[in-house]
Length: 283
Image (cartoon, rainbow, N blue to C red; front, side, top):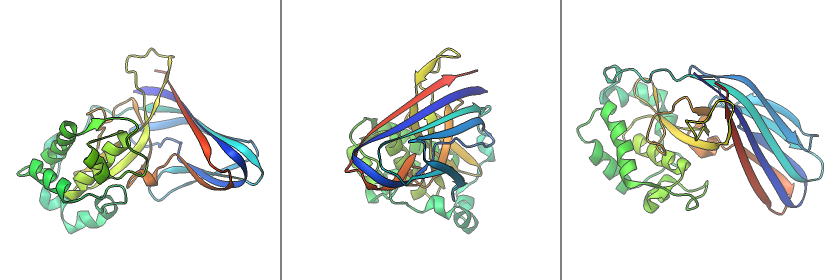
């Protein structure tokens, strides 16, 4: 078990005054079978903003706030303490389903939203053909890891070549991208086989050897999960399942379902964005 403290600050400095804005944030980690949120709070400035919350369709906690007064900047700070215990890993391969069960109407009906291509996970014939080739003759238990190895061999982690609107097909054409791009491509490839897959946003502590109490510059992160009888995680950036240094915040079909902060505003004339994540290992 690992206990982590996370401070995530998002700041917008507007070029012109904003007269009003309506916002929502997905910055509060989830409590589930693998992690428990011990403390969580969201602070918004200017302080006149009133913060509410709800659970969205995908189960993520969403904080809402609006500002009905003129302001030149906005800062959103989320502070959380989370205990993560992902155990010894998934059950042995013999417990997983075969293709007949994965592709049955029961599965496709239950997981239709995790199988249907979304805006950022649509792909063309080239990727479909490549994925079909690397998984030919394999059962789902072997196919999903084979897809991840195919990505590892063909993709390069490179910052600054994509944006939040880059889709899986565009990522493949460039053969490079960041964590969200690799997650989108992996999800698209798995869905093309009929394997349900979903996007996960959260954090990763980047320094496994950091001392207890040491604060480091953390990272917002993205990985994926696929279903073969139960959900399995995989971090294609680091080529491994999510571990005790991964903290899950939200799940969805792709990035568009889990954007950390989004909103609409009147005025502004553009903005300068700055984001800082600090993570401290407490145990």
